[in-house]
Length: 110
Picture 1 (cartoon, rainbow, N blue to C red):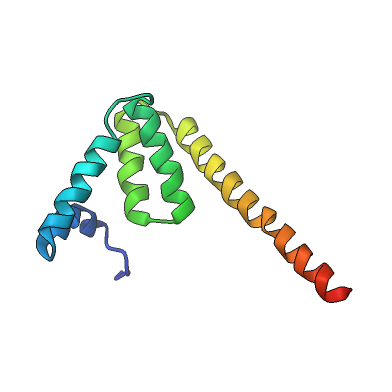
Picture 2 (picture 1 turned 135 degrees about the vertical axis):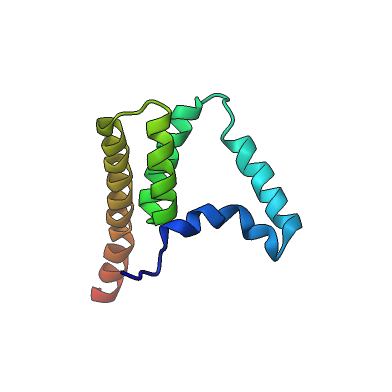
């Protein structure tokens, strides 16, 4: 089946510099620094990345960070818990914007 997102395209990510090498190099340098061990472990950063991947709904990132978290020793329960955290934050963000709607509705109904 042909789909818009092709899993094999993930392997081409390193080629994004083909049209603008200087900016790609800067991005990959930054990306590499971000994922180095620091105050957070590489494993913790990978779980954060997995949760964010679900929040922004990037299938390439979901594939990449599912593999990465498993390689870093996470289990299925931890992966799913990270996804639930993303879902809770995303849902809460939608709900808290309901305050804006209520403010507007109250203004219009006065």
